[in-house]
Length: 467
Figure 1 (cartoon, helix red, strand yellow):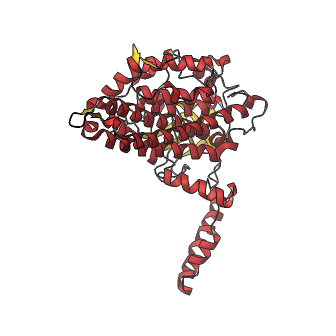
Figure 2 (cartoon, rainbow, N blue to C red):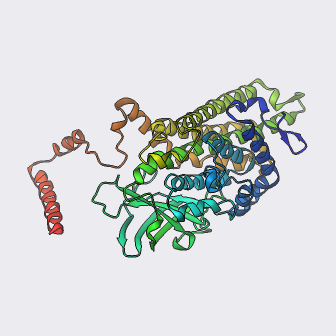
Figure 3 (tube, one colour):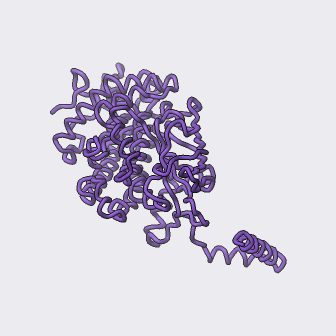
């Protein structure tokens, strides 16, 4: 079936360049329906949202009507029960044909949904929320960043939780949160109530909109104007049933639910943005002609070379993402979240961690680089807003620096490959003794004594606090 855009064939890459063999017939039908929604609703709103820095709530309402906000929620809880392949396809389709900002909002919403469905069973509060996500268009987001840790892998230095008679008193400061002040609900992670210095001892909590101090309207950035990312502050008491899982379950939640979905949907969103750049550039170079030569821009071998390389890079990144999604489906009974009912300690998704980080790197690098190449191919026309490429160029840049930044991601994968998984110090727990001893060796006797005195004072303080 030919790819259509309204009543005409799609102006971008032909259908033969899409890896449909990963999709079921139902998923292919959903994609066609979603492309039409992008044409009529999401794409026009993307232009308006970019121009006025407005949150694309109407786009999310349209997605809710298709049942896509609860796409991974089990059917028994009113969701679509979709697998990883289908969810990846939806994120890519939204970004490519519709609105990159909406795709990023959708990504962070799905990360939050994953955190909930991972431990939903038996918690009436969470089950109720999940069952109403699409009916009431309840947009969520994950607020995990920390001001102290930048673009690295986060651990909550500035956040805490403690038990109180009413439930949990949670304090959280987040540097960047998508949909800040616009989301209907948030999940966030802090150190556990009995935290004793081990940053792998984490807990996850659910908050409603009125319990979170967001920053609506403060987002003023180069691109992704609808994203509305910003700081978040939480200082509130919530009921006992608003903990997601149990105290200390946060690290497992990261490894098994949050990170796999985040990295996979990074790939969907940014592969989609990169493909959109190729699509709109193809429309221009195949229609724009140089009268003095009697040739279209697309007829020049140099332009064909640029597009060939761009398409090959696109397919390499996409196939990596879809193959990873298929592997995750194979490991989880086709994307089931009910597997944790019988075995709460099961970690089938976490086994693909290194592949998940790689797909984030590949997709965001692809979008970053191809946007420049397509802009150069289109020349001066690429700067004009009506071509839409300049908006996509701006939108394409954010993924590279979103945590973990591509520099940090490459370092993680490299260290993993060189020294094994145990070499990755996710939670800042391991002492690099060779470096420590090397630095101490630079000190003279007086300098070493200062260090000894400081450490001794710290130990006395800890002993006194225990008395």
